[in-house]
Structure formats: structure tokens, C-alpha cells
Length: 130
Image 1 (cartoon, one colour):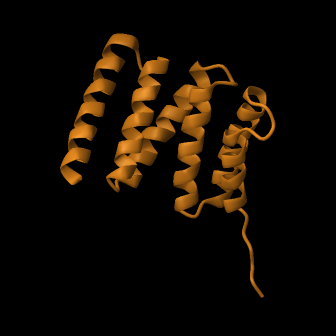
Image 2: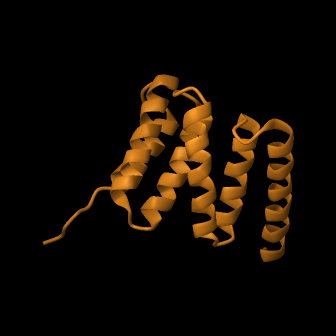
């Protein structure tokens, strides 16, 4: 599996590089490449590298995409999941709320994506057992 992740990482890095050169840094296709590469980095256990890349993608997505866009929601969710995994619950919650706001405008109540983001929001709650 490690060899395949290395191959996937190399392929996604090449795709990202070509996209940046041909389309520009903030083109939606380049942002998709960044998201895909970030997910491969996460799968390979390179959480810090993934976080840096995806935080950059999130900044670019916020400035280059409409405020209600599925790619913005996907990047925001993935960055939020990293923040949650690192114990940064307030940051994760803010990112998940951003995603929920987008999804509320895209989907009917009860849609599976809304349910998923609600589960992630619930994970940000701190429960103190007495």
C-alpha cells in the first residue's frame, strides 16, 4: 500500500504542477488537484504536509470561488477534519459551520451531506464526564 500511495502522491503532484502552469494557481481544477493531493498525503500519514497544502487551497478557494460552491465545502470540511484530529475543536467547528451554511443552500433538509456535517459538528462538542 505504501508504494501505491507514493505513486499516487507523485501523480497528483505532477497533475497539480501542470495545472498551475497551464491554468493558474486558483483555477478550480487546480484546487481539485490540491484537494486530491491533500487527501493522498493524509492517507500516507503526512498530516502536516496535507494541512499546509489544504490551508492554502482553502484561502484560494475562498477568494476565487463563489461563496456557495461544493469545492469550497469539500476543502473546508477536509481542513476541519484535520483540525479536529489535532484537537483544535473551535477551528474545526468554524470550518464545519461554513460547510453547513453552503450545504443548507445546496441541499434539502435531511440530505446525507447535511447529516454528515452535523455528525462532524457533534464531534467538536466537548463533553465532561463527572
